[in-house]
Image (cartoon, rainbow, N blue to C red):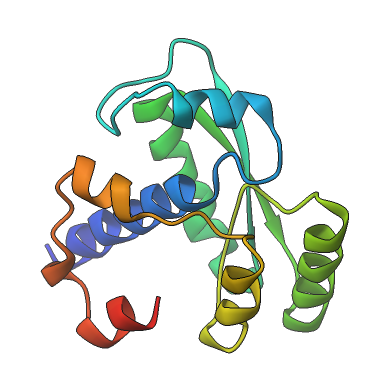
Length: 146
């Protein structure tokens, strides 16, 4: 049961990550899906492709399995891109500068302000309200930080 709870929690995190970043890199397929008014419970009519970057190769298999389940339920294909810590942040900065950030990506508190203050992150407030996400289910310090 504990493993299932973790899977559900991670699925929600991936869903929030998708909502947070979809459309930020100019990918019209992702933008159309998020701007169409489709709630998280509805599948897009056409298959959507998004990228998801992370810095931990040890987590790759977990996220690939999670992405596969996510794709079955949402009709959104997740292309997982894995780098080591240093390469990740260098690549992310280059992507932000060049307008080619991944659609979704892991964020760290050390770098959050840099990306948020430069309009590189999507404000989730409206999505959280629309989908009635219970923020009390998440650690208060984490919610306040981001």
